[in-house]
Length: 309
Image (cartoon, rainbow, N blue to C red; front, side, top):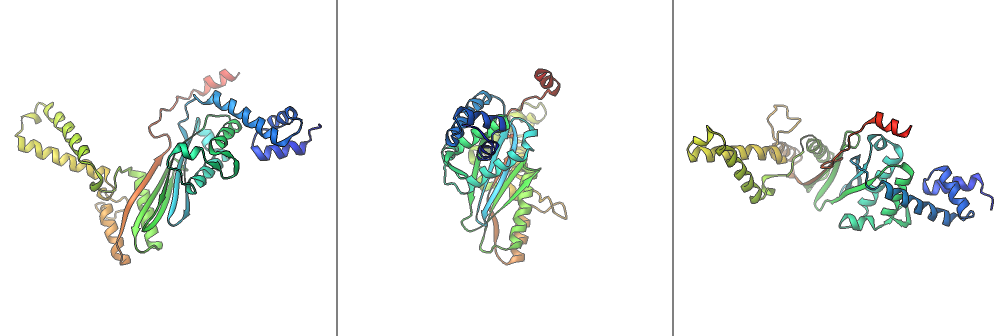
């Protein structure tokens, strides 16, 4: 069967694969479009397997809001920052986030096994494999989290063109522009200062005990501090713990937009609550940072070019 340019174009639009790959697939399947798609998927799988052990620590975080009460954040990794800026990759990450905001999957395995919304004949994992074949780098859907507000709203913030993605869930009886603006300000705070908890109430007793143990060991290893009375040492430990909690607990942090340079996030929320006449608090937040905790490969551009030559 003669393979026409129109057939190649149609297959390319269906799969996103390269023109020559589409032509080859149609030739191999005698122009059968469905079989050609399957051929490309299998070929993509082979390509993906070859790339699977490459380090993918760059990439993008994206947040999609379904409405005022539902949002999802995802992190999708690539091997290079160059690909992370590519429109094809960015569109794919947005599609993954859209899938996540509509998903009921409890974990990543379940999410990857879901039918891909754009083409339910494939799974999310299949769509990823095809994108690996198209882009030519190892890609990973690393994580996702969906937030549904029970009594309030959700807001989002993206920092650094997708380097950090934040969702904040507000608990409030009133949802208006003032509340959303305040939560956006707090989302920016979270992106900048990376708190671990909303408040001290969330910090476990085990964590506090462990930190005290470390601080005590540090003091006892100091020739001068170790000679101080036990009461003084205990006071030093409590003071250092309190300082650490101010750094890692959101409501104890100094608000980044504080005019006096002293107002805490907790006091800012009290101010907002007073202004709107309703209590407003942060119930939870999610903060994803691209490549967080991953080992990044060292790029040697000259060596890469030399290898290609």
